[in-house]
Length: 265
Ligand code: CAA
Image (cartoon, rainbow, N blue to C red):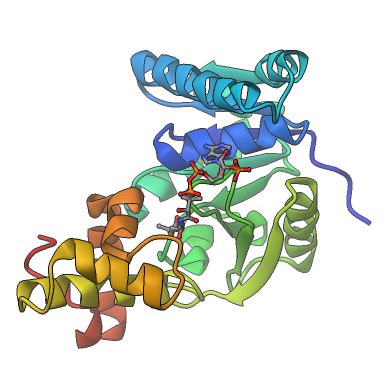
């Protein structure tokens, strides 16, 4: 049995950072958001508040539960303050290895010595990240899916240096957050992005070739294969910049089938 996680620091307040913080407070954890811009932090807190408000309007959350959730949410532009009590630090920064290494190298000095350093990267190497920030045993992939409060999967990525104890703690976190975990080896694109981006990229190539309209390519997969949304709509949900960064990385690591389509560039 591992100790329950009480608090989580979320670094980066884009779609994923906001969603992970929302999920955490809804599941009873303290969540502290960090970003370099206070305007961005204010927007993120307002967005989480609005998302919780929608759940109240739908009768899925009471007003008392909403204010309890908001009581567990805080934000800071000071990385030390954001991380100092964290049992888990999750970075949801842009897909740049150098940026993630820089963040975790600072976090290593600021967070408690037991804190798990989780990366929400979609494809970058957890082994490299762990080695370059010099805490490989506590560095792990914690890959959430958009929208994080809704999607059931947590993909846990074990780097070469990730300790068994860290994997156990990540599995405990998944349980606390109500997610179904899978544990995968550190390989470019893991078990999800590698398959997911292929569909999106092929749909774009089909659009370029004039096979059908964007709407009909999406409808084909929604109605014919029961995907909840078509591959082009899904690319918009994830973000074109995010998908391009994943494809560029997989193209360099795994080869030609991942070359980003011209229309995406
Ligand atoms: N917080 C809490 N609940 C939320 C929410 C949020 N931010 N956003 C949506 N929901 C809930 C809604 O309340 C609703 O709940 P009920 O059914 O209980 O009422 C439910 O989610 C569905 O929402 P909607 O009715 O608004 O819309 P929908 O039925 O069209 O579903 C969707 C929206 C969940 C996004 C669905 O279309 C879907 O599953 N799409 C595929 C998403 C996907 O594949 N995500 C993974 C992308 S890849 C990735 O993220 C990883 C990466 O590395 C890039």
